[in-house]
Length: 293
Image (cartoon, rainbow, N blue to C red):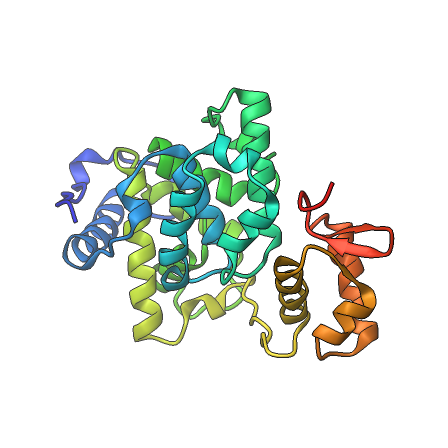
């Protein structure tokens, strides 16, 4: 990792905000930078500022751990190296490379995003978070993270590991901490010269905290416990999509025979997938978008 010097207090202008004084900001930044310089993690998406690559990685990292994303990211970029390739690919192929990441709606939204970038912006990703936020599957936090990592923009966002860092340092003893309380601290301590690396440093420190202490994110008002995958609707959704990857089209009876779950539950989930356009229904058969004409 590059040796990023901590910002010393004389570089930080004095402010009238009672949250933190300059020396406190400098001390906090030094702690984070020192850890990152010594133990920062390395991922392929951290070695590029290609906007398309950053978009792919940020969408993949939504609700999915880095160890699962790392190999899939490499394969996905090799198969779909740019917005144009992804925009024009058959969705079944996109889904095939997405398999294993879960939350398959993200794959569909990612392809729709690529199509919008091509059709509306000539293949060039906008640099403004408010515009990126309007793409399918991209919320304010992801839009801001994309701008920070792709364009080194001093945008402000909070994700689970960053949240853990600020709760640990600035909200000791407090429960149900809301992101609106954390955001001013993120803004005050942001390294505006190195926002891209600063956020990577924060994330890595947050990962370390979660290994050393009871998860600080549990003190967040936004903390939720993920439901078990086995036996869940998510598992059945994956089974349906996998079945349709293996066969061009299937009837409802076909799916009942292939998936060993309650038929009424399969039918309900199947029609949810149709509403989301992840599955197409035609003439009493079901198929993936783009696989049949």
